[in-house]
Image (cartoon, rainbow, N blue to C red):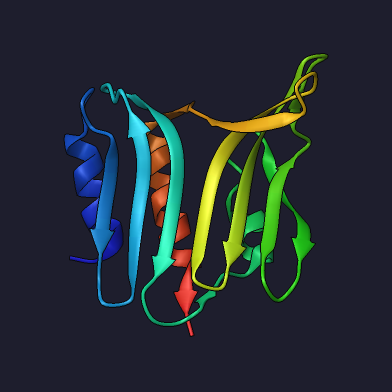
Length: 150
């Protein structure tokens, strides 16, 4: 059973007490942080991939092209040898806060999460967002297929 199948099988069994989906092979550890799964949806917190041996290879253009079914699309905002960042474009914004998805890619890790930046306080915190199980399955398939190792 591959990593996609392992995570999807765990998602089928997820319930209110489930806090994460987790799979590991010889090359990487993949975790989906979440809570309060019901029949149709879950509170999604983050998707992380950690490489155990080799640097991750994630093409930001592929991410932009594939992840188009969330509330906002992702756009490359920073690219250098030590990290790559994609964020929601445009983010959700009102007079008090900015809410956005962010994918941060480093040589041995990737994290995808939802954040709220509070304008008055000048800080951000990661937040839960509701995703249908259908979209969460799709996210699992896309992220696991996008992430490669050297």
